[in-house]
Image 1 (cartoon, helix red, strand yellow):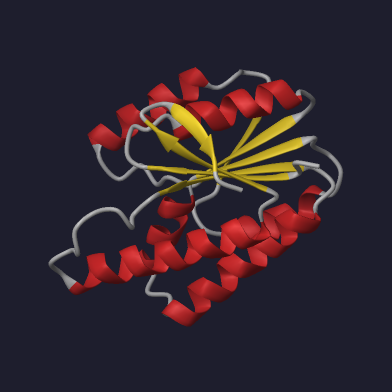
Image 2 (cartoon, rainbow, N blue to C red):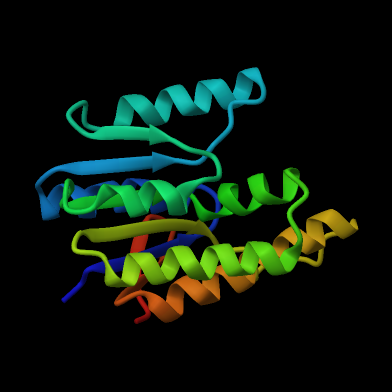
Amino acid sequence: MDKFIFVIGGARSGKSRYAQELAKQKGGKTVFFATCVPCDKEMKKRISRHRKARPRHWRVIEEPKDIKSVLLKLKRRFDVVIIDCLGLLVSNFLSDGWKESRIEKEIKAIAGILSKAKFTAIVVSNEVGGGIVPENPLARKFRDLLGISNQAMSQYADIVYIMQAGIPVRVK
């Protein structure tokens, strides 16, 4: 059964749209975790566009870091849970000065919770392994941590899609 779905892709690959389509197909009560922190005008506009694209009857939880605690409180109140996106979550942890080992542990804990949940979980993330090596240490740390986090999610997920130019390609 496809209870834990991981959708990964590059920028503007259609991963968020596809995750939302999957959630609509599943039907039922849906909660959407938004991990983005609106830090400038451009980001606020992006968030506004994303809000307008989601069905109004979905519950939205804007939570930049404490996904694990909120997930544990959900119990069986929802049929579908979307987390969008893992890349921003990892970035938020780094911005708060979390150590790499703590971030890895947190991501694995979240993946473990989702793999045992009674709801369908859909996690969206950025693919960062296909580009150049970043020139500064923080960017390299982010790339490496997100790559490790993506691997953890993929291990726990029942189904993994990679988005290529708006087309979902099932890889697991």
